[in-house]
Image 1 (cartoon, chains in turn orange, blue):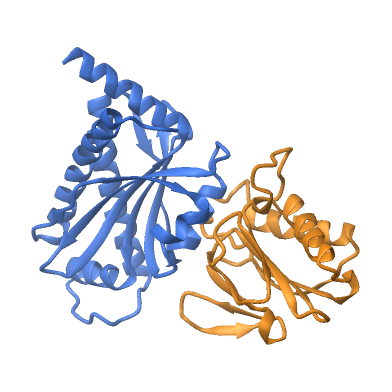
Image 2 (cartoon, each protein chain N blue to C red):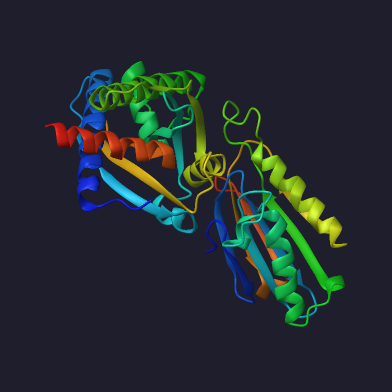
Length: 151
Length: 203
């Protein structure tokens, strides 16, 4: 279980529950069968360094470094994301954090020349994301009605 | 922000007064007695939010705390999906406990939340001697964690810990289990503590 702002690197299943505007980002190495997952809350760290997993701009470089340190090649990485919803229209008027999170993830990946293989973001729904590095890097998304599907 | 034992007691009393008024209004709306738990004050690291508010499907009516402090945090009326149906059934004179929530239910939930949040804030504001008003309400019926997480993400102060004041309100007769939760910003919490300390000194 990966809480808000936390991340994990390894080969065992990982899960981030109840993502609203947060993003669950997964990176899977097809060659080494390991992966990383992070539960991002905000787009920019603005210089804060205490919880790098909390922000898109610090989380992604950190995970890429952790994986390349383990010998992963960038070309073998499969990146997916889910979340980035807007749960409250009224409160979200001028700061759609979910959308900004998703945009920042795309931008930071582009800066690192990494393609986003799949995404399921936006809307007004909560999502629970599960990641299985031990099962081909499968990523499933489940919503409040209980229906889970692979992305 | 760290609270001393005395400050915790004072905050608990504040929650008690607010929740008691909210419980009374709920009881009037469902025309049945409502039991209230002792208010709990929890300081929660955001990484552990899921231990306190899970992915279960719930209706949340949410208000921003406004007034003398413009962005004081949030007050939430939290009710499981099942209880929400029981609640609106009792208000609308319906009986099917397994039906889906429709627009009429949503209006009813907004109304209940509105009345309860107002009662809670009126009572606490009167005690503290400063104006606290609820914003217009917003409603979501979805994973509870997703809703609360989204509120934390848009708080004014960048935080790694939040303070949750929660009181459980239960109506046995209609099988309604709900919570009223206040999640203040650090600035609001500091004001609460300061005002409460002044009150204790003067009494």
